Image (tube, rainbow, N blue to C red; front, side):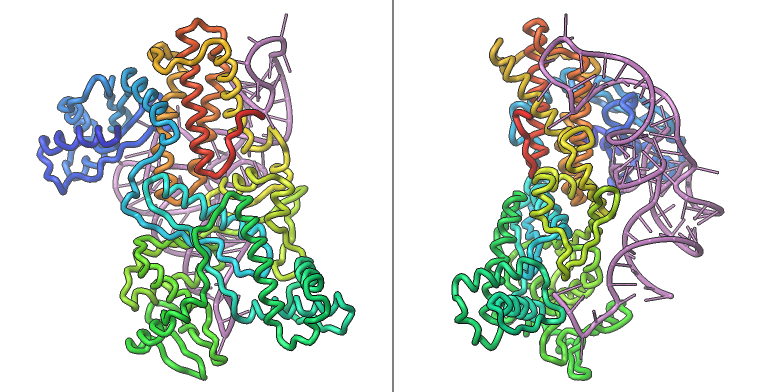
Length: 544
RNA sequence: GCGCCCGUAGCUCAACUGGAUAGAGCAACUGCCUUCUAAGCAGUAGGUUUCAGGUUCAAGUCCUGACGGGCGUACCA
């Protein structure tokens, strides 16, 4: 419809004497206030300046020359400072409602992003411990944005990037080793920055079960580290699966050393004189790209910092043919992003193809007080614990509920409430309620596929239908902004629209024709709720 | 100090990226279950969008400055 209106308006503007490039983008939007019609454009106001005319006069001229299909648009009004408001005709609305039912599980999909071949990299927690609440937001955001992109036609790959070498992993191995000795009542020294979580003991215990005391003579931590990695990765994958997340690939940072990507980056930077040696380390001239300081790429110990593999990783991703690399990470990593972009640009890649989705931190709140969380110490809350407490659907929903750009306060008490206070159930309840009605109708008189929908004329019916029709727009909007919460806002409005309808209009007990039409409207609503919840990765239950 | 993000109802947050009378949920108050699920509905109250300027037909949204909060600013990831 949006396109239809744009295509109708454009020739009129040309007719009014404007050239192709004088015409600004013709924006069609859904007015907030339904009394302003179903679609509106501000084009007349935008043209006021170049045409040096009163916007209302432009609007009038435009409207009088506009040829619109009566079957689609029933009225056009000029309002306020020069808005042009369009109202859909009944025929159009009923036809589109029918369309929802025909498309069914596909309704809401588009080919908006059909040219995008995207790699979404997310979670990417190193296997040093179970996923925590902090990772939760990352995981759910990444997965849901991936789903949104898929719904808009993109082809999407989900990848988990990790590093199982380096200091942190060594520390993990040493921690397990210490616990192993502890378990066998031997002397042990727990490393100073070791991992203190209880899970380390579990890993050590299972080593005792498998190997008895035969590992006591192991002089280095390797075997402990490997066991830890295996157990922890297993645990992480289970947690992800529980959250409805399945990765397509896991990418080990080590690969970048093996395939020469790392050397290539260093060499290229040196050739371009953007990398240099100082005090035994290799530095990247980030000051050339507007930074206050140059940054270290390779430490004097010979170990690279994370920035170097990060750059190599991105070039590698682009080499694999993706035209969009979407990285999801927390606000604390924001500073590395410009360096990576500078790096890949120097390497001759298009930095426009790399996009970052940054999210702010999560605070868990319980009984009105924030949880204290420190990752290294034992007092973090794992994602599994959180899901045990509030459930998987609620967990996903809460992480998606807010704009990624604002801090998220996760109120555990509110999340635990089975009803009223919990916004997830509102959506699921609406769906379950409709299914229940449909089951009952099915017993009385099975729903026909082609009732006369034009019998639907109550305000609640009409506004519900119109709400249903904007679902694809809402999916597209959320996808383009990479902001799933926009879809949640929509679904809340939809559910609210349904409950008003439910309140105002009875279905069962009305005369056959009306019951059939209303049943179909309810069915379409359930479909859209289910599709929306599917994008969010949340169940749409048939009974509650 | 510098960089990024944020400041909207008592609380948690929206506001289609510059549009028309700033909206939801929770908390408070008033009604509504003999009828399709009350995990619900209808209504009341709650605002100088932190403050001060500016840009324009139009500013919560853009610009400048202040104030307040978060994160970063490592040869940690």
